[in-house]
Image (cartoon, rainbow over all chains, first blue to last red; front, side, top):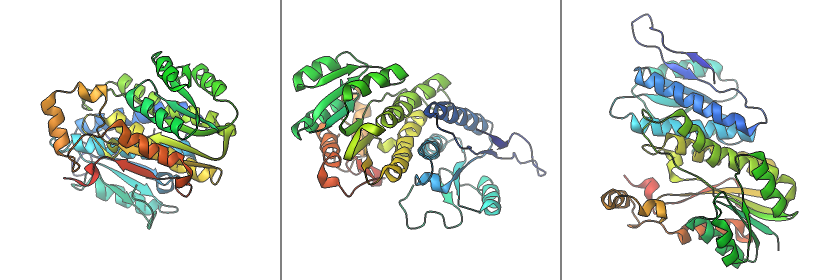
Length: 137
Length: 231
């Protein structure tokens, strides 16, 4: 689970968010356990340190339109994020999921920055019209 | 009639699911780590497999007993290791993922070639997949099952259907062990005004496994007495 950023102070002294973005898992179901566990530990550490957390997943994985293990990881992360948001309501934890559509990388970066600086928590933001007309993830 | 496999079948819910599937005419294979599954199987005229599905040998044992024509797989086995995130150990987080999610995936994929046309996989997810205090591990595992099922439903269509049932509180030995005041507060949040029964869930599993659900795949049915929409 790559941590793309986090732990540093921005130009205005505000803690930068921790951004977690899973890569493809491959064919071994056993890879799910360390992927989810590492994400949990990284997210918890960041939240306890007062940093916002943004988990970036592929929108297609939320609907299971790619590999089954990648779908399990994406939706598993979403479930974890929602629980951490519930538990963090009182201490003010901010943790959200951004779902990236195809070819939306610039929009994802802008959205991550916006979400991390907001009061949102426990939310899923799908970028680029991804999954419109589909089930709520 | 094809075989129906139920994991976590030594418990009250798994046992009831087995009864409903047997009543529908399936030959039953009941799987559990707990040897008590043998007594449950004997009562139901089923075959029992005592196996740890987190290891390859356990999965192989279940597959070997399942035979060549599997019509139904119910991934019901699961554990809880609840704690606030700040107190939750990495080991407890990983254990819940491994048993509730990874073991189910391993068994499902191992059975791919044995599923008959029209077969049905039913994964026991949970309302907690939407988030639940003290259950970061459980939420992740049960939400992961939803995504896995959605993907497999598309990959294996039209030969095999894959769906999930997401219960809320169900009357089991675990919930009966809760302090009465805690349980009462939880029940108060359920519009149906009561805790769910194993039959509430088993009936939905039996429906999803049946030809009546032939046009349903990749879906989740929340069996929670309206808890998902209540304040």
